[in-house]
Image 1 (cartoon, one colour):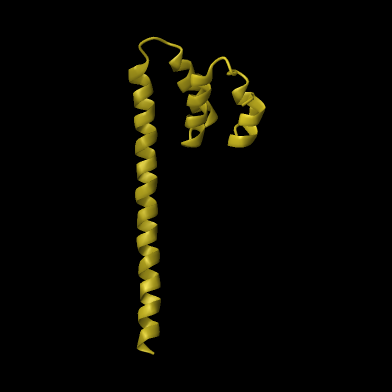
Image 2 (cartoon, helix red, strand yellow):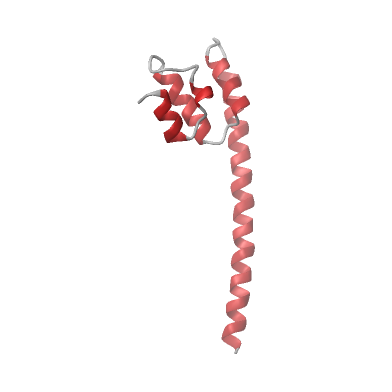
Length: 99
């Protein structure tokens, strides 16, 4: 798959992919994964720069942990919204059954 195809397929701007080509499939795979899990371009660039450094595992884990916590917070928020939505649906159905 060419970089242009990856750009179209994954919705990643071509400019962001141009740094990585078919000779570096591991980095390209990481870049795509970071994009798919919601990293912003600046976050991706920081992470990719850290990949080039030795002894950056701790920093990269902190970045991933921070993103994970953010996603969990979002999930919990959405679960709360669903709970409220379900309560409203339940209330309407309960009123309908009284009629």
